[in-house]
Structure formats: structure tokens, C-alpha cells
Image (cartoon, rainbow, N blue to C red; front, side):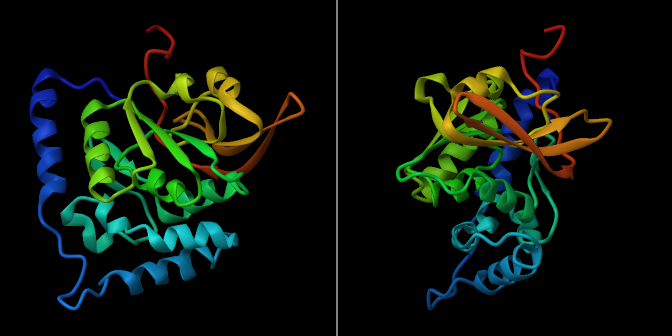
Length: 249
């Protein structure tokens, strides 16, 4: 997710816009209690995920259970399950369903009661999916209003095992390390050393690496026997990971 310095008037106005964007009442069930998006969600799983290379039943079930429409602005509800990222405010996006599922699948299998770190909370969708598979999820968002909005949303939806913090995710969340899995939702020019340090022995990290102007690849990082190995998974396109760690700051 992109991190940009905002002018002062945007800092005042955008939190109000974000609150309005996500606060409009949205019907998700019929009067009989039926989930109106159940069929759409299942179609997303079968065509976009199973139709590609998402085969782990645990990841598929997590994607079935989390209502993606609750994590997009009301005006985009009709597009919630389309095969593309969607804007959520502040120049940020919610990743397309396939990428969320793929990054989740790359962490599996997770041990019982696993502790997972996410860098780049956004609207909270990826964290909600991860919470279906991990004991505790710790997620860091660099834009404070987004972090606050996501925390409120996740609490309202009863995702009690997801913990949100506003901060620079490049440095992870040391107080709760080590982590069995780490997901980074913005492209880094290199794998952040603090995240490698906070990855538990035997753990896995899914992170896009590369320049915003050139090639980016989703990388799988594994720590085994004290050694770190990397594997390129697929070419991707993410906004850059930014923060105080950037050169010149």
C-alpha cells in the first residue's frame, strides 16, 4: 500500500471522508437472515481461486468465511468480489481476492495457536482472513486513520484475535515476536532485516520485493536451521512500502 505525505487540509478532511465511506448502513442479509453475498463469495472462490492455483482447503475456507463486502466502501459493494484491487481511501487499496488467498496459502501450514504479523492493515481484510487460521494476528498500519478505522471494523465484526497498531511496519512488532508467519502487503526494495529477525525458526514470510517502477516479485522467505532461504513465486504489482526507514528520512 502506498504511503504519501498528505497536505494539512487533507489530514483534516480525509478522516471525515473515510468515516463516511465506511459508516453508511449496508444490508448484508435478507429479512430471513440469508447472506445475500454467499453465492457471489462462493463464485469468487471457485473461479478466481480454485480456478487458479489456490488448493489448500484451509485457505479456501477462510476466504469463504470472511465477508469481503464489509471491508470496502459502500459505493463499491457491488464490486467487492471482482478480480481486482479496490480503493479504500488515502490512495490505498484492498488487494484482489487471489493475492490475499495466495499470500495466505504461502504461510501454511501454521502451527496450532500460531502468531502471525501483517504489515499494511488497510481496511483489515487480509488480517480477518489470517485470523481464521492463526491463534493471534498482529497488524501494523502506517496511516493512523486507516489503522483506527480497521480496528473499529474488526472489533465490530468480532475478530477478537486481531490486534491493530498504527506505526511503521518495516520494524515489525517486536513486543509480540517471534512470529510463525509474516505477510507484507506493500513492495519493499529489500526484505526488512527486523522482519527476518522477528520470524520464528521454521516460519514463513510472504513479501513483494522490487521497485515501484520496475519488476516486483512476490517472495517466499523461510527460516530453517538458522538459515534464511528465498523463492520467487509470481510477478506482482504493489504500491511501495514507505516510512521513516526510507533513504533520506
